Image (cartoon, rainbow, N blue to C red; front, side, top):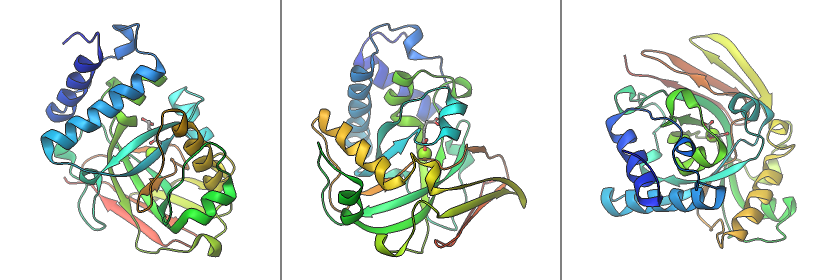
Length: 262
Ligand code: OOG
Ligand code: MG
């Protein structure tokens, strides 16, 4: 399918996801895919999943908020995407490789929101006041582009490679955690892979959310009370294959572990 407009971009990305195949960059065949148009593709793709698959919007995700992620992807601006109900993977459930193309796992700090945040002018303090609880999370990303090769509009259109996410069981009040110094160490099949602190996420994950909310306001959007927010991979993402187990030990938010199907 040649992609030259918003509807064909939506159908192509949805087909890649359901047929478990990746594609080349849309920006290679459609010059008109600028960032604003890419965000429209993203919302139309989400709307199609809600309308056709009975999915529901449950939150917001920030992407490319750490240097580790920006360097790996070769893109230096953060982005936002939409979290859907179908992305939720229960703790203890196997990671279903039969639904995915090329999954990678990344540790994130996750917020649930007590009050609505609407820009412009939202500050880090406003974000801290609006958070209900802070949790540890794993995001499972799964780009619909060959080998995660994309420009910023491509990945925005693809709802930022979203596939699944897991939220930990330990929820802490924002006032009771030092987000900047919260540490995570991840290991794959028992071997240490990466470590980071919350500082990796734009200096402070609450500041990252303030920036994102102010950018959302330019598109007439906001983060609502009751939403879940993924603040972005703290480390580079780790590819996961059959039977692999990835674990994350957070300093105050507990331990997360997920095993892929064989
Ligand atoms: C894009 C998704 C970015 C994050 O946490 O930075 C993201 C990608 O890396 O494919 O989820
Ligand atoms: Mg992520």
